Amino acid sequence: MAETTLQSTGDPQQAGGSRSGESGGLAAEAQTKVSEVAGQAQEQAQHASQQVRSQLRDQVDQRSTDAGRKLNTTAQDIRSVGEQLRSQGKDGPAKIADQAAGRAQRLGSYLEQSSGDRLLGDAEDFGRRQPWLVIAGGLALGFAASRILKASSNERYHARSVPPTRRIQSPSPQGNGHSTNPVGSTGAGTAPRPF
Image (cartoon, rainbow, N blue to C red; front, side):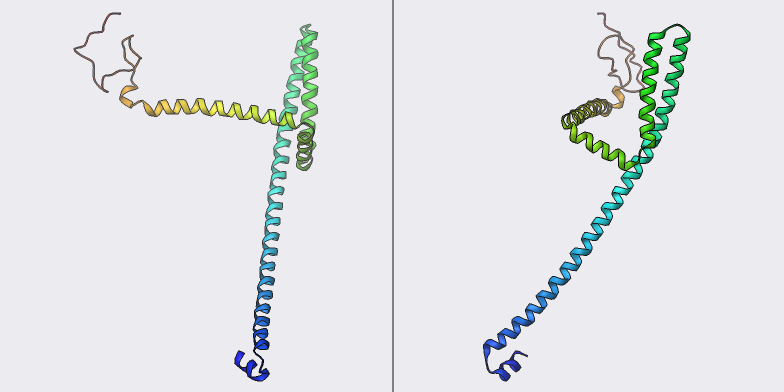
């Protein structure tokens, strides 16, 4: 095709210009396709993000409603304890129980009646107002979780590291409490050593 253009115009620069025009058209077409694909990917990402947010809101709403109902039940139990204390003549502890029941009932009603959006919004607002408190709470939870994991990992480690033949307790009161006799051995021929 370039030869045809060269022959018809007789100018090599015009022939090169038509080549760059063709490649420019291809580049523009490729750029359009890339833009379309990028737009579709962005739409899919936004759709997925909206689905995740919706599921999170639904989960928060459901769990907060359940927690609110349980808290209201607990508040009723605390109120009945307060009434029993009052009937026994213990007005001071009964008053404290009533105050605790009132607070528990207010929190339970808030959790039960609030939507997931409102709860998440309130949590975000609290985090903005009290960032150091949120950080401190996160650190405390992380520390507690690490202690629990460390304690459970030590137990698992010791359970795996001691061979089954050494886990049998020795009837003798000395030593570390582990028998050195193989399983099934009676230990005949050995006398216990005195202290």
